[in-house]
Length: 208
Image 1: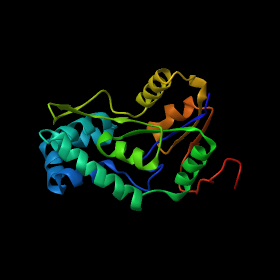
Image 2: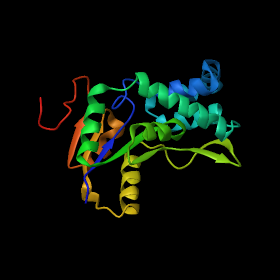
Image 3: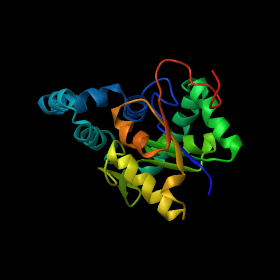
Image 4: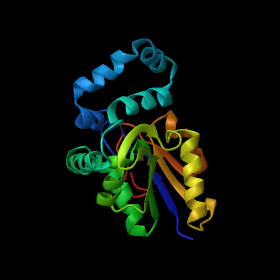
């Protein structure tokens, strides 16, 4: 059984959040402002009380509904190249490459959106991308999410389902990397975990 290393993306593999910049790339800053102003009380309440799932669902509806899958996918590919070329953390990327060189299975497990995370996973040559997915019908985004937002306990559910589908043992989740409370359950699931902060992550385990 190969070891599995699961990586969060935003602020773990990257130096910044990617969801809002991607939405802005798709729809423009004006559309994002309009989405916030359409429900200012609710948006404020979600932001203060930790309603990230509700906030994301609202923003996804406002930004993506009615846009074709092809249009969003093409933007996602361009955005993924932008992330790889300038927004990656060199230290955690080095650790990910170390896992790949060892022959470990590498997963991206993120609340980021599939439209750019799937092509990002291809560019990084990971084994699978488990993330928040946009709903669509007949080639057009309908403004919904396919299943829950992939954060917190949902990350664990996605990993367990992937491991089961791949015919692996849950014990093979050896490593997990994240940077926030939304990664806590995933970190607790792994035999070895690292809460990524500002300090550089050594390329190899056991090095300073």
